[in-house]
Image (tube, rainbow, N blue to C red; front, side, top):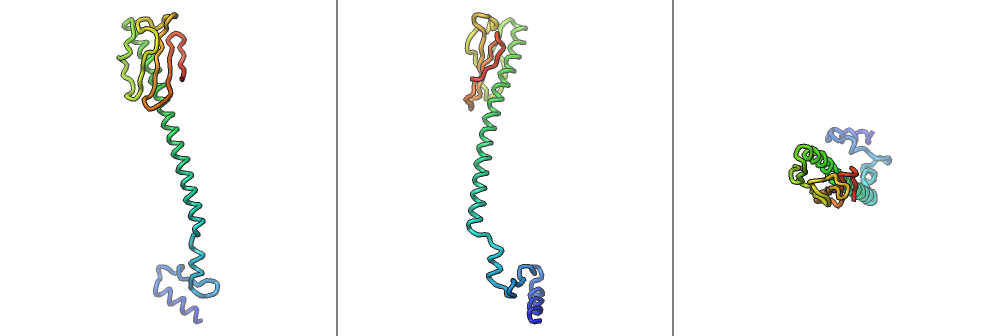
Length: 150
């Protein structure tokens, strides 16, 4: 009965936290109860290590996704450039590489051939496209109609 009165008195003094003040298996409220609820240093170190591994993996995935997006942008701009220049050639009889309003980060240059005769079998027009923050280079040959990644 003495334990019941002590438990009741505790609940009356602190009704908001009755579970925190429960007696352990021996009937006493003491440090044994606190040790059951706490995390060990090893457990915390394992959690921190796992979070570190996950953060490194997500960072590497993000970097590769950004690189892939830059490559896709360069290739897309090259194909859009080809369509634009073909239409320009049909209307004007020659190509103007500087007339294409491509992306700000993509550089498109003529590598070989002539803009006056891009479909010449001897010297076809070959253009390159690359993102300024990427190492991938895409080439398009106007005669073979192939896009190659270098």
